[in-house]
Amino acid sequence: MSMSLNSNRMDSYLAFLGVERNLSPATIQSYQEDLRHFVAWLDEINLDLKELTPEKLDEFLTLTAGQEEYSPTSIARHFSSLRGFLKYMQNQGEYDYSTESMLERPKLGHYLPQYLTREEIDSVFESAANGKNPLRDTALFELMYSAGLRISETLGIKLSQLDLDNEWLTPIGKGNKQRLVPLGSKAKENLKAWIELGRPLTHPTTDNIILNSRGKPMSRMGAWKIVQLHTMHLSKQVSPHTFRHSFATHCLEAGMDLRVLQELLGHADISTTQIYTHIDKEFIKQEHRMHHPRETARAANK
Image 1 (cartoon, helix red, strand yellow):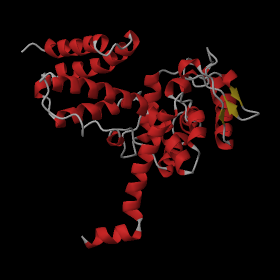
Image 2 (image 1 turned 30 degrees about the vertical axis):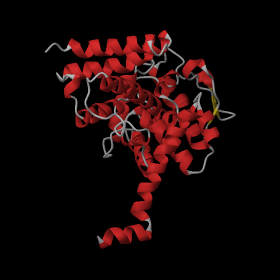
Image 3 (image 1 turned 90 degrees about the horizontal axis):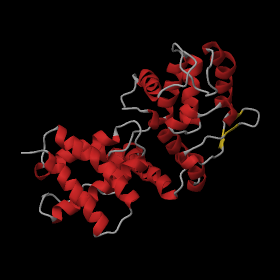
Image 4 (image 1 turned 60 degrees about the vertical axis):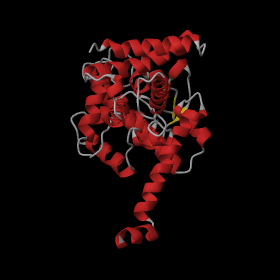
């Protein structure tokens, strides 16, 4: 069987979106981006769409969600592209399973990047403090966790975007939007230590705050390795995004208003921020089951 069949199906779906649904080329392009991964994966495991089971699909979704740069929003968008495609294929008689239950929004939590508890975050900072490059690695985690920056913002932020005296960071996020993020006293202290004591020793060639040992901007791969190094002791899959995700979750747990969190994260749309509350609710439910006296008693009696 020729595997390009999956590609042909994708092309016919994109044509359908253009003609029947009258979507703009830009929208169709973003559908194509999302679906390309899916089709490439089907071809890679040598699977025809007609033979795709929900179990196999689950494997793909878990894989997608685990990728370092996917935020909850990109995953949600991926899912909805995929749902539309599979629904269309179902109508064409090319896919046999129902798409309803499998890609439901609340079930998204099942695939989302895990976040770390406060204790786990503390243990990461402790690992960084005892590592080979304590000042820099701590500064990196402060930007990702304490300021909740995206990895691209963390690696791109310049000295001029940090105001230590007034305790503000002004990262430039998606769509070149600048925002204000307050800096806690501990984060300020750790960033200051790196900038004054550690950073000059690398002989900086640029004014990025975070540098590699050669004084150049750190690459994503470099950051990824540092994250892996200091989270090896945890039983969770951790990516740079996990820290932003943990920041959001901890802010919500502490009772922060969703609008304030939206500002801090630099989300253009509140619905993006709401994805974090989905997970939060799921988490609260699990915690309640584990710790509520009546629930624990019930479990014990089973």
